[in-house]
Length: 111
Image: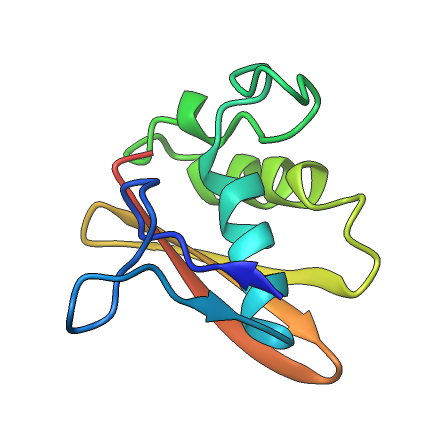
């Protein structure tokens, strides 16, 4: 169980403004999102958390290849998940992750 975090990095809130908890696969997906979107070295309590996806120029010819390499590196310590593909479309990066034989799409905007 964990507290839900919104894409801006703040606690997500319910309809009356209170933070709420998530569990199961939602916790794992949130952890993966943080690893993909966070800058490695940017978390004071864990300098190894995060990745280097933010360094990728999405318009470069080799951007999808770099995105897949860096996405795999960012989530390598999460045993329950495996990056199984990436896509760049309309200025956003999408990382596809396999968890228990189910594919989840994680959208990363502004990396």
